Amino acid sequence: MKQLAIAIIAAGLLMLAASAKAQDSFERTLAESAAARMKDAASAAWHTAQQLSAVALGLIGVDYKYGGESPETGLDCSGLVRYVFQQVTGITLPRTAKEMSRVGDKVALEDLKPGDLVFFNTRSFAFSHVGIYLGENRFIHAPSRGREVEVVAFDKGFWQKRFNGARRLVHAMPDLMPALVGEAVAAPIEALAAEADTQP
Image (cartoon, rainbow, N blue to C red; front, side):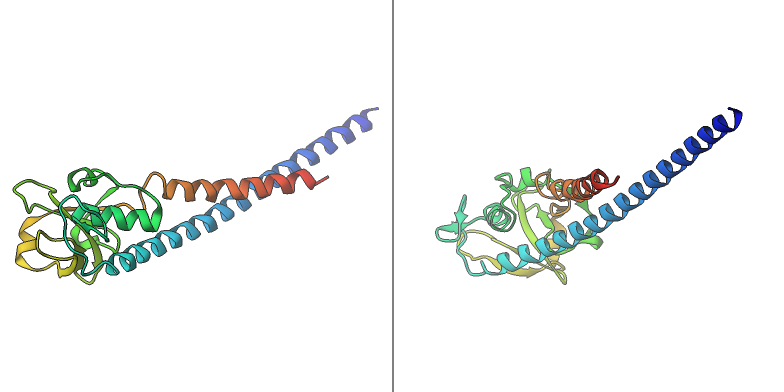
């Protein structure tokens, strides 16, 4: 009887150890899968930034129009940014440069990447003008009446003196990145749960 009790206890301990090992394996696999998905999400964000630049460059030469929101009738600075983001991400940004300056994450001048928004004081108040950073010290914007969408150098004195800051939306848009993060976590959980259900 004593030997039977010992055997039952030993079997229970073995089952607990096996269960703990399976749980540990599940958690490690989940972490690896989530990390891979996050890497894919980062890659997707980089690709989105490249697309933003490409679509914006396709608008060079479009006439400036105050309040303009389409290439056919003209674009103002925020209209240009809104149009590009809408085309690439399907996300509708706020209408004015000032409102856009509150979206996303702050970015230091030295950390700018393609797709970041750059803001300037061109109308005697902060964040009155916005453009899209293209890389290599250049940005694209819709400047003012009588002019067209153009690419300019960031290091020109005019722009340096009026620079108000920059924001990164690609990694911070509530409707963009969290969806990718959600996929990164949900997919491996579902796959591993399905796998666990098929195990004896």
